[in-house]
Image (cartoon, rainbow, N blue to C red; front, side):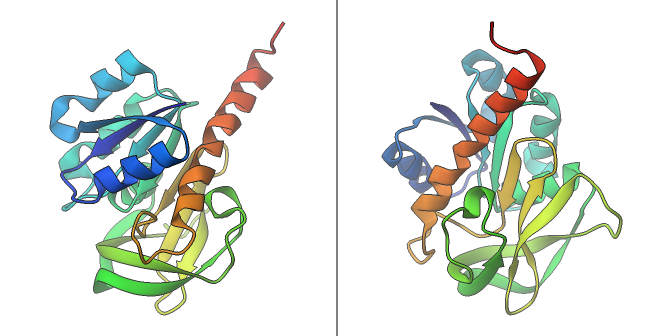
Length: 203
């Protein structure tokens, strides 16, 4: 399975790549200044992973990447990538209640998607100063996880497309079940394949 991992100049991205290798994925890492959309079109990955990084999603072109890819493309966003998913689908990007840098948090989640077979609550590690908030009206994203201490949305899932995001870092050594979450993210690809087969049944 091919995974294209977009790097927004973050020190954790190669740990994420290592996790995908551990679960059997063929992973290519491309930096945001290396024309990731061209790499996407050339390599045709099964899963597109938008990795963490400093700044805002718009500064790194993450919003343009999401808008440019195929509508059936499986996408998993981590931290900055999670925020990009929120922005593209109408959520608000705001300052987090506090700056979280390597801080442990208890997470409540819905037990589905990337959280399948992960106990709730579970412990994760947060590195962020921004967060996304619900726009106040129903839209294409649903919240899948929140931080127990401050209620910040820590996970989102698209209602119809194979897209999920998490605000925390699953690859952090302090995040429990992180490797399982990475493995679960590959199941977004199977969701994508089922969607395509429903439109174009195999003969």
